[in-house]
Image 1 (cartoon, rainbow, N blue to C red):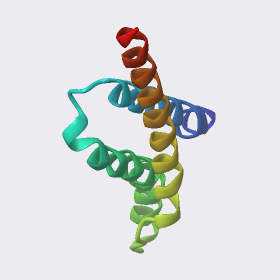
Image 2: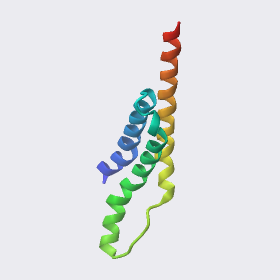
Image 3: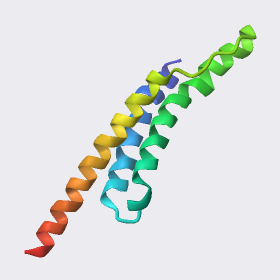
Image 4: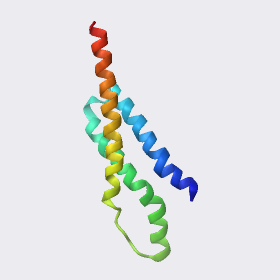
Length: 98
């Protein structure tokens, strides 16, 4: 249980932040940055749902939908990472013009 809590509440947000930072820094992702925000939000929503909730549903033969409120933390974490990445990219561009 401790492992899963660390993964879902520390590793997953940290990896989302780092990956979205690199997406924000690079120009290769310019066409699909908005799509990646929704991917990270869905990943943070479906991670616990596919593991814990699916196991619980199989045990009790009851179907539950994923909680949409779990979408927001992943989305916000990705927005923060992309914003910092875009700021770093803009600073590099500004420094290169000097």
